Image (cartoon, rainbow, N blue to C red; front, side, top):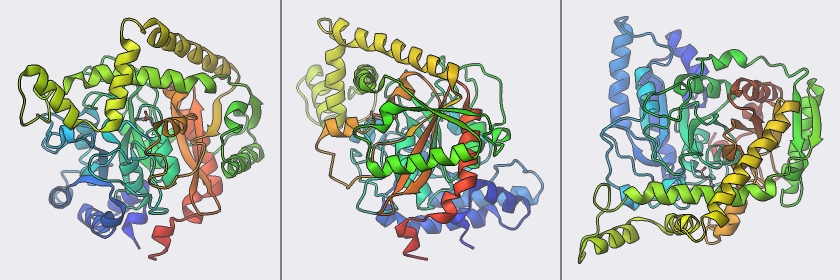
Length: 492
Ligand code: GLN
């Protein structure tokens, strides 16, 4: 048995039955990292030694009957924009290359409380800006299904690590698709929770009104379990909502009879790859056979949502990234004439080109002469987008779309063309604009054995609905059993 092939709920069983110890599990992952990391390049920091030490300690505690939490001794990987006390949090930027956070993010605290084991910090586009993980200052992560393709982004390290079995599950962050799109490119499950469900305290802010932390997992059950751990109100994040605690695994009913699914025709038209469309149509057929009511409708927002997203995201980023001035945090230029020169040089040398592009764009749309024309307009359109979704959810329980217009693309094919990179976010950004939950699950592969993702969008705080609709499909097509990355297959 390859331990690293197991899902977390399977690992949990084996730990409980004493078929496996935490050390055995952790060691299997450490060995997998040794074996795969050279090719996949998913980690910024690995914590093999620390992880094994913690696992031994936990096994000892379990033996003495001191520990029996349901996630005790289960390993995890964490995106490198989520603060971990005592371990570097770089945001894959030169600016934070040596930054060690003095505190844990709330989600990390929760994971620690469960006595889970951190295997390391995962690569990403610099400050989560991008859709391919090519904008990392340190390295380009590769897609385990085909090492010449991108894993998606910005949580590409998290998705690739899960897909190549280097971690059993991981945390990512999603501002405009950064959990769902890499999950789709790597054939795994990615959930972006409703804005306000998961605390953002300790998540390095990109665009505060859009950012959410969420799970990247092998299957939907694991996704529900990780959401159980991280969801909940946090006094340290004023945008986190007081909602009742739920057990999301209870929502997985394997039944979609009578569920109303709306399919926006705008996201099945021009620009969406034919094979992606075909697979999504097959998925729709599966839902119909399972007793769901599926209907096409018009969600007339796709053409505004990208512009709205890039204005709001860049505006907020330009403000959030103001703190990286060479004085309070991170990189400081070696030589400078005066204070202004120190700011200018530290920021010029510390940030990469994509981050600079966004800061410049954001500063422009917020400047007094253009504020009304761009930023204010974008906020007005944001309200419009929310209203359109509200209307759609009067009729439907779930909205079904592709996660991305294409499968994973070749490394280097879009990184020099920012506009093309932005256009690839067409299916995901409106979910963040409206603060809704969205999940991406694999629904098949194309002719070259690259995974295709399906996105299911729910109304606010209706994670249970999308998780169940996703789960029911997963039980039917059994993606993990039927499709394997070439990279993994080749080595069996
Ligand atoms: N690709 C989008 C962007 O570049 C989304 C990023 C994200 O969700 N962090 O902004």
